[in-house]
Amino acid sequence: MSASQLFSAIVPFWRRQSPTQRVFLLIGASLVLVYALAALTADWLVSWGLPDPQEFLAYVPQQPPSPEHWFGTDRQGYDVLSRVIFGARAAWQVVLLATGLSLGVGFPLGALSGYWGGKIDKLLLFIMDTIYTLPGLLLSLTVAFVVGRGVVNAAIALTIAYIPQYYRVIRNHTITLKNEVFVEAARALGAGSFAILIRHLSGHLSRNLPVLFSVNSADAVLTLAGLGFLGLGLPPQVPEWGHELAQALDGLPTGIWWTTLFPGLAMTGLVVGLSLVSEGLGES
Image 1 (cartoon, one colour):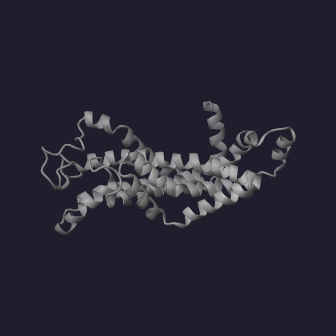
Image 2 (tube, helix red, strand yellow):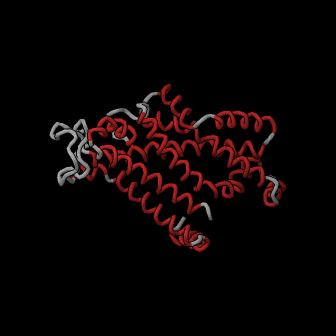
Image 3 (cartoon, helix red, strand yellow):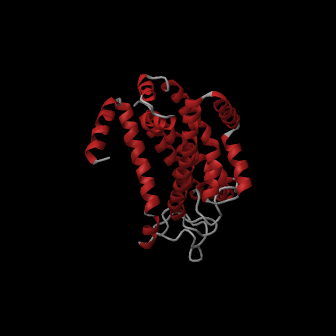
């Protein structure tokens, strides 16, 4: 898509939005952009003086915020600011991989199920509804316990919980579209099922995906933090907000607030940004 085509698509969308939705989109997109830039430039920031998130021998543990360490240090001597920034990169890696895998599995299954119907549809619907009835965090915890820690493993644990959501949305939308006039015309001209799904239905089916994608991404940030808090997320040496919160809890009764506040604020900011984006897109 060229720049002019992209601009032509954005302008009508922007005009359709209410003033409130525009504010939501601007604030949400700005927050998401800040976190994306932090994740992309984390290594570059280290080369420019940001402390290494795994270097602790030179730091005194649990020091309050200071000009040398803006967010203070944690109980192991790690620089909290560095851990927060690298935690944003870990969150983006897992969340984007998990939501991408969920979309890659749920979209085609939902489209095929809704278009073909019959026994295949009933079987897939039964499987997806069974998965959907399970609490997302509990399901992710179970899968994470089986597959172990790691970026890919954590993404797989999150993916299992989100596939049914994409499947249900795409399936229901496919059922409403498969008997439309343009589909009947394509079928009359000899187009096969896959050709109709790819050429004629995929564009219509993908219109609601940005909203679902942003909602799932916000939820995935919280679920990943839950896994990390319980010790089933990423390896201990990888900075991750949930793990940082778990390590910081024992310091709260003694007045060590910064090791809990800043990772918590970082996680909240990304979730709020993604949620505002989904609210803005929901009116399109």
